[in-house]
Amino acid sequence: MLIILFLVVVIFLVLVLLGFIITILFLHQRKRRRFAKELEKIKANYEKELFKAQLEMQEETFQYISREIHDNVGQFLSLAKLNLNTLDFEDIDLTLELINHSSDLLTRALEDLRDLSKSLSSDIIKNGGLQKAIELQVSQLQKTGKFRVIYDIKGNYQFLNEQNEIILFRILQEAVNNIIRHSCAREIIILLSCIENNVKMYIQDNGKGFDIDFLSNRKNHPAGGINNMQKRARLINADLDIKSDPGKGTRITVTTPL
Amino acid sequence: MDNHNLSRFFYSDWVMTAITIIAFVVSMRYRENNNKLRLITYYTIVSVAADILSFYFEYIVPNITISSYTLAVYVVIEITVFSTFIMINIDSSRIKKIIKIIFPSFFAVAACLVMGHSTLNYETVSLFIVLEALYLIIFSLFYFFNLFTTHQNNLKQQPSFWIISGILFNSGCSVPLFLLSEYTATNFPYYYNIVCAFNYILYILMFLLFIKAYLCKTKVTC
Image (cartoon, rainbow over all chains, first blue to last red; front, side, top):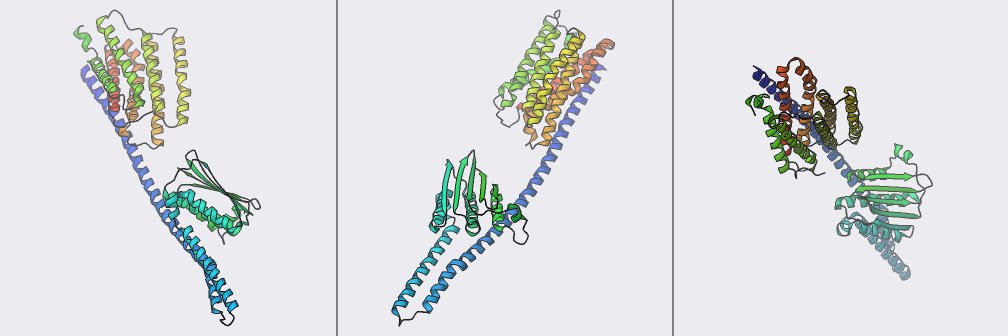
């Protein structure tokens, strides 16, 4: 009798233990499935956002090309055409001057087109990396003669993947464009640091600065350049920090993990 | 060795020793697979030694009984090993801190128990075991709380899950068993052996889960 009682209790204990383990495994499995579903949803949303951001960036790029062609290349070509249309072959001196002037204009148009092509192409990053691309950007800025540009690298720079370097470079271009167009700055500092498994890029100017809150709350003219930079930073999981105050310049910091 | 003695716990003590030895062999064989299981390997070594000692005193020199001090030392080793094991398998630093704070209080309460009974007899050791079980239940529940609040991969291949399930089950069943043991021994001595046998069964189940843990495929290093 005692042995039967013993066996019954033992079987009961084993069943309780099995029940406990199965319950925990079942609950955990259910939690994992829910987690996987949520992850999938987040992934789908992220991909949708990514696609939307890419479309927006493409649209921005087209607008940039259109503006550059219209404002610079178009102007030079129009002037050259005007010069050539007003050639008076009876006045040789004037004609020669107009032809020379037109030739200068065409050279400048060609240079602008070359710069535009270079700035849009990602070949330089593919071949020389982000460092080379920034160096080129710096030399272009210095060529304008309007800015004193300080460029430095801290730490041992390690290459990011190509896509991330391209996006970081586009953020830099956007920031530089904003400086050229809006800041009235005389000095630009570009710093690339590679410390503690992070790549940090600082772009600082001594221009007129702006009120970040005011700019981001503006409904009629939202801060497109800043939005672009933020979207791009999100694409590579980078942190974008903008510090600016009216009259105190602007500092943009992009931090991305290696 | 008479037959009455051999079967008085329905051979559960023999089975327990056999399973403990198997667990010891498995733990030695697979000890390189998972550094976190090193503590459990030490525990199986201590358990095998304790089983051999208890058999020696039970069947070879039955006139000498194991002192309650030896049992108390075993309880202290057991709670230290299991608490540390649970703690290293919890991700949350806050829960780890709570365990670190709670754990030393076991010794304070145990010391109070000894002082209250003015001696360390078997009744005190039973209370010791109940106290140990209560602490281990709390720590194991912390582990399961952490399990469901953090993301964990395949649970079936996590050794800590099997080991802590064993610890929780063993502790959960030990509490009523040891609370009743003294009462049973006094009022129903005939049934006392069955209570002991259940204790052995709990250890058998726990060691089976330890063996399962060692056979998990994951390779984790500290």
